[in-house]
Amino acid sequence: MSSIDEFLTHLQVERQVSAHTLDAYRRDLAALVAWAAEYTTADGAQDAAVPGDPAQFDSAHLRQFVAAEHRRGLSAKSLQRRLSACRSYYAWLLKHGRISASPAAALRAPKAPRKLPQVLDADEAVRLVEVPTDAPRGLRDRALLEVFYSSGLRLSELCALRWCDLDLDSGLVMVLGKGSKQRLVPVGSHAIAALREWRRDSGSSADSHVFPGRAGGAISQRAVQIRIKQLAVRQGMFKDVHPHMLRHSFASHILESSGDLRGVQELLGHSDIATTQIYTHLDFQHLAKVYDAAHPRARRKKAAE
Image (cartoon, rainbow, N blue to C red):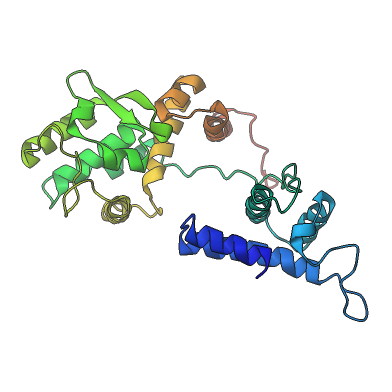
């Protein structure tokens, strides 16, 4: 059994990774083996310049591998995943005394360009959240959408929300975010009203989930994703609306109005302000549109003029 096969067995048996994760590791490490196999002499023997066993690679070999994959057209994101698999493999070899140092430790893949998050404009956001409350599950849907857009929660945070986390009189919600970090987030007046109606209708106790699932406990993230897509279509929206779009819209609209990047960071629960800075690009796009529409010398005259 090769060292890579041993490593994959370790992932499956000891770490019990998902089948999807295991397949990803297998594909990425198979690419490493395939690259090494290309280096053979005319008589079929392995070229001494590149060992046939990846366990014998040094950092120069891995740099050549990354460069070859890049020339082959692999995206920066895929290269990052390839290197991540290599780092895990070599870390495992190091832990078990198979190598004296990891050749992948200092390697860096090209940075993937960050995609700007998709957002709804203010009118679209209002149209989405103002679903009819007299429809089946209407009160719950209205409360769910209002809280999402009002407080910019993550999907996981919204699903885990309990009534005891909410102080509707003060207009605040205590959110348990990533890394079990707590933060207080304001709740808007429209969301408070929707939540009060929903609680009166559901008769929930303080410790129960605000948005329960059919089988009890919290509503599933998948159920929220599906429901928001359904509601967007019902509201006549032609965008592919997903839950995180409401969080992005919350952040973009707050930053657009206030210009307070640090405040938006705290509201979103980002540990690093660099994560929040992506919204400044959206804000600049908005300002550029305002400039183009309003400034008398912003646009070039058409050739026909």
